[in-house]
Length: 98
Picture 1 (cartoon, rainbow, N blue to C red):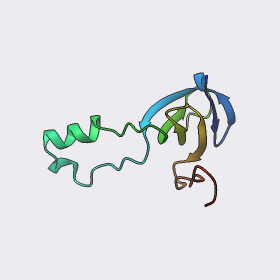
Picture 2 (cartoon, one colour):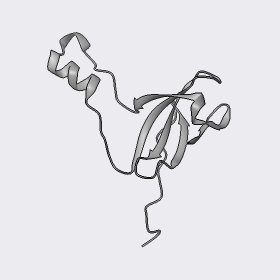
Picture 3 (tube, rainbow, N blue to C red):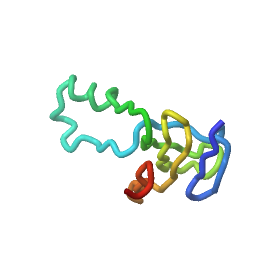
């Protein structure tokens, strides 16, 4: 079970949230000009990395607000939570200073 920190309500059990997919995916500037293939790419094709990944979550049983979560997809560790109007936080490099 994940413990996710809502930027407004604080830490809560993952059962209070709804997953919303990959974060930081911009809406097309001219949606009417997209081909079916381009729409399919926008709607269905997302990154699937092993490691830190920015996701959108909604606090469904709390404040009902959307926010972003950085989560490690290999360990499921929640690395950071931040509002949609905030930039993605920088994570420290593995292995410390070199």
